Length: 503
Ligand SMILES: Cc1cc2nc3c(=O)[nH]c(=O)nc-3n(C[C@H](O)[C@H](O)[C@H](O)COP(=O)(O)OP(=O)(O)OC[C@H]3O[C@@H](n4cnc5c(N)ncnc54)[C@H](O)[C@@H]3O)c2cc1C
Image: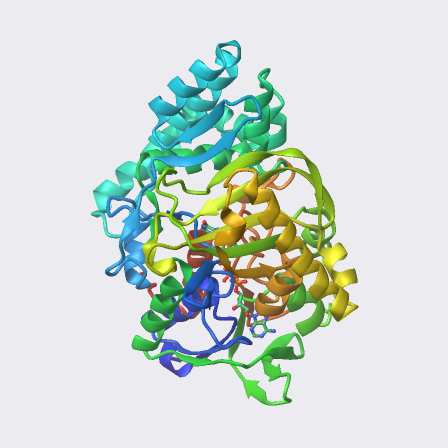
């Protein structure tokens, strides 16, 4: 059968679902996406409040540089077209109570020099860190559009890279952010490294992030997340794909170990030759498939692996500019005069992301700022059982946060004109992600093997069913979600004996 006659039903119009749709259409499949929300993008989203745009996702997009191997993919899926990127000179700033500030420069040499000046006693750890970034900086993936021999050369380069640096690579994969932070003697550096990376997350990804920042290949797209999601949707529609919004899938229908279609929450049944779930992994396996196709390997992550934490996400529209502050990728963190209980835990610092790199997010002369705090899903789930209490807690928290910001930005409480609080329940409600997680599975030393042996995109005993997206790609992120949709369509083409077209 020709691909065009075969139907792919895709659940979810996040980056992975739209990527599966785009590559499906590029390879001649009839595709139809069912999305429960009324907008594309899933977690890659933002919302407007009284002239301000509060962005819930993009800090950096790996592959933003036209010289990057990922860039061709961003062109194919419509993201890189007419997009302006900003390259901040700093990843983040961490201010200390002693008046010193740790500046995480994007440039490796400046970063190294600055850290050494701050804490000469930590020279060995600092040089290990910057040496790790330099190692990742040498790593070059082949690009889709490169000539065969260039690609071959790069693949051989990767082979030799692993032959000579494989041990170092492995060593970094096994070090968590917390374990590395603990190596510093200087308390401010220790604290700063704890602030900028998730404690359980492998350090290797921090090294790659800094290598990409150094290469100016992890830019912030002006306009933020939603314009990128809309560009992806536009590309999919331009290729002839179909999307049904406000269409929540309740069940994936099966018969004799084979998928036959889906059923929506309103009872509508849609037949399909193949079904791809690009939605939350837990809901897919335990609800849509009712836990019927689980072996030990499929179950393991849901029982053992840690997820990216759920978030308390506070957004403020402020009637002032912050010209005195540098542009940063992920903001500044300042110490509170004394620890404060905010929601489920005590906080000693407040991280603030000031969107002074993107004037499109606020009216002239004003600024959108966000405060992203880890917060426990179960705490909010319990609170949400009493709607009034839940809403009151959100209100109390925003007032508390504004008062805390006064410590660093005197007068700000008079300048705040819009407030918004999203909790783990908000992330769950709008995207369906398990426990409100914002990026799926963390890569830890225990599951680092998935970097070379990817998770399966199929289930044992169920034909014509597939998964893509952050729940089958530990580490998550936007490029990974696109690559996940692409990897899947490549597999499906192989099953059908079709030569895969990637652009
Ligand atoms: C605060 C924050 C900061 C981030 N920063 C970055 C960053 O700087 N760089 C980066 O690369 N990544 C970042 N990410 C991560 C990135 O956004 C995600 O990893 C990525 O968007 C996941 O895409 P996905 O398609 O796999 O999943 P999702 O975006 O979760 O898409 C799943 C889709 O399925 C839909 N769905 C779920 N259940 C159903 C159902 N039953 N029926 C129909 N539809 C359903 C959902 O509504 C959603 O649209 C960030 C995320 C957050 C929240």
